[in-house]
Image (tube, rainbow, N blue to C red; front, side):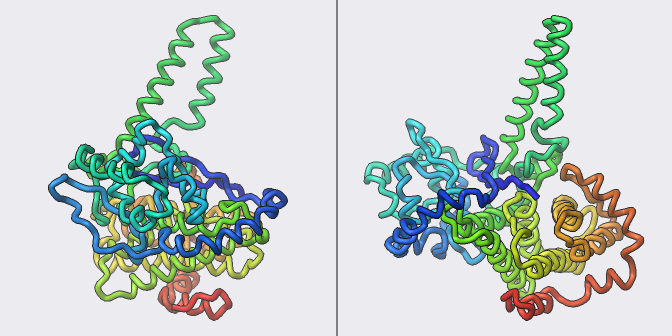
Length: 456
């Protein structure tokens, strides 16, 4: 199964996320020659890399002060600082010094004024703590560090429609260039362009060329409008389907960053073919442990639990979590089962709090569950023989039907939903009760006991 991996950044919301090539084993020959050199550098850089995204953040700065509404510093599940995805050109050597994954640091700012980094207020607010923690390795001059003061003083604060707390829901980019009623142009536009070209060649009608230009401008305007919505409060844009809590989106980014750290291609290495896939499984196991910690907490709020489900749904939909080709097939099956157990546990929490309803205050239940179902359905219907591992799909579908929640949103989901409805009668009663039986914690223990290595 071929997937594109996408890394997202909502710092400015002006450009679409850059696509990242999926892990490839064809680099083996060229990469193996660099293995020894990179390993040597790793040892010498270990001291500096200790804070490259894993150091816990100190007490957070106020998000509203004399400078106005501030950008939230993105953090990991335990308050870890996240690596910036944009670095100024002066700090390019820090990528090697700190062993930063190249698939995560997606932009080197070479603009004349360093408008994406050193001169950008939001960049400093989001990444300032990490930058201070790695000050020596970044190689910036005193003058360049002083640019922070000017950026904070002259840069525009967040607006009223910008989010800066984990509980707020924001508009996000559709994953994998989805075609929804509210996002940019897609493949159909290419077909339209071809038709226009044929018409122009056949009739010589200048109007067709004008129509083509008009369509192009309309598509550009639509794309610009989408970019303007990204990162904004979802409540201000009810027409936008792709919505996530800011905290859930941070989870997605965190797990993506962690997968990049374990991708051998990001370091021009080749350990063995399945190395990166096992690395992804390790990240997913950490995700499960984090979810178990939250769902078991007596003080956790429903949105805190849902945040973890959002992170999983977005991660799987992005194509970044590729592991199914790993040579440990049984372990892969257990991971897929835990996806379902985690989803069901999240639904259970919302049900107990009266939030699993069609008019819930959580606005993205339908979208997130649809993403999880679409992923699991594609795995179950793929070439991996995993049909019996994703029967939890039918339980989730049954629960949404009972609650009056209409699933939908992602492209291609309408066809999947029709297939699920057709097969649902075959998965009722005892088979579904077995899927829902037991707690997420007990199933996590079972995973560990089966050799997966996960023990709660």
